[in-house]
Length: 304
Image (tube, rainbow, N blue to C red; front, side):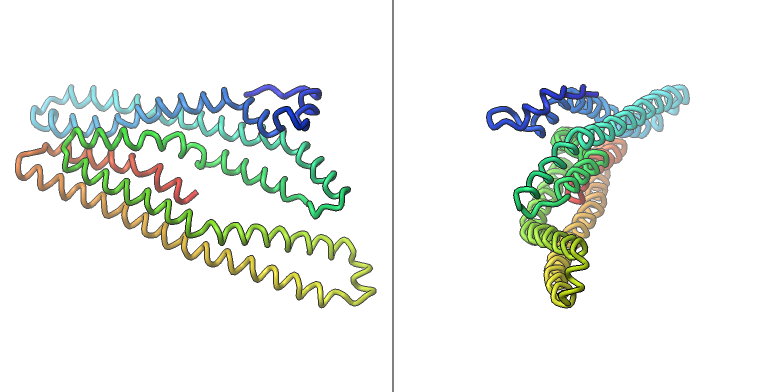
């Protein structure tokens, strides 16, 4: 893991000419990100074990009846999958530690900034600390690993194309549709999410101020007015969350339909090619597995 910056480095991070604390922290995590990228490379290469195994079993073992070939293929596939799962666990462990380390490094600096802002009369609160927690949760979950796996989508699609151009056309079309859905989801929910987040901060600050000055509020009989003001802001938050949630849920449901449909489509096209002696049964199954793996990061990115 990256080393903790010295106190001098941390104090200089706030100078106008030098890098910010956030930039220093991200720079310190580069080696950890590089390790995750290397692990993702090996993991995605080992992902080929399943389609290659299916391809060899259907096209070689079932046609030759050689049990020893089946045993060796099974042992090799098992070893590859075991290494893949171990590396995936290590990658998850690294991302969790990156998120915790960023929280530890940025938390004091952002807390100090919030205190200085409050002393200057700014309406600042603990929003920055909540933002850091959200970033930590994003890094610690599959959100970050999805972006490491996303560059492999065209590689898997290319492998499907090598099996047969018609299967490749199905894969390309499905990837394009999912990409367009992700773009549509972003543009459709961005404004509503931004408004909801801004109003949510406003509602939290209003609630904190009301609670902090409870005696004055009670003495001046201001509670009903402040409650109504808070409720109005909170209704705006809920309205934005409902709109973005409805759109996001529809897009995610459409994404799942596309995922399930393309699995049926590629098997159907593959079966048609097998019937017409243009493809082997092993290649048909391998293409289906490769397509599932290729589209998984895209769907994960949309959901995250």
